[in-house]
Length: 330
Image (cartoon, rainbow, N blue to C red):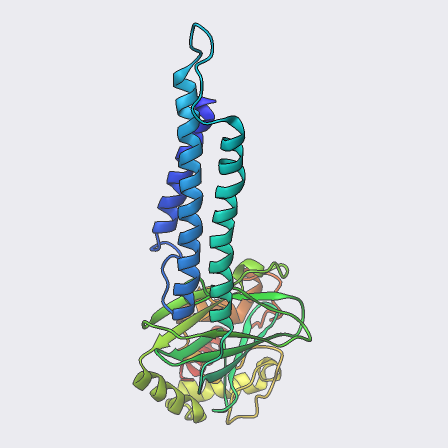
């Protein structure tokens, strides 16, 4: 019995340490939006009440263990058994559940309330990446969601294959993407930063690598991002990139990807109009550098097996030119 008690105490301490550590991975205990603050507050309330119950029960067990049997017959107990059962087994649990229920209803109501003049963004879950669009601004990108700090955001969520789940722990709760059903995720970021999101519903072979980034920016910086992305990318600024553009249009790449202002209009893969400015590739699987981009083009299956992009064999000179072209798209 004593071993079980100490084991339980160690587990509680470890969970508390994990919850308080936000440097290694995003956590709901490090909220960066009004919605995340609501969810975090509910979590801390549940954790506090659960810890209090555990400590009380554990304390009673410790008292019972060290008290032992008394000689000379049982000592009269001041609290009758029935009273102890009613208070400890009925009234206190009912009060705890009532408090938690009221908090959950209050939090759920706040999370569902729409605000005035939100920024509308649409996200579609693919295999295994995220198509992102700003319908009012005519912008399409992938795997990165840029938002302004302090402005209400409404993200429409859809899926064109199986059920996914859109989750950014530091910005809000999970919302499912269900084929044929349009769901909405609302938030208002309170701090600038880049926050990792992930698919929280098992969706197939590359579920673990179906991640994305949410970039929360000051309003002025976000407005500059919008203006820059509303324009088609400028043409290649050097001969190597110009050669790469011709090769890209000649190869199967242009049949699967779209680049605004060119003849590439494929819809199977992500829109590459701004691929040169993205922070990562392959749904946040690898950094967006020349070396990783080259490896992804030649054989993405070795990096993310099962994705829909086939290997594209190229000579080293052609590959260098295509990489230069894609890196110029910003």
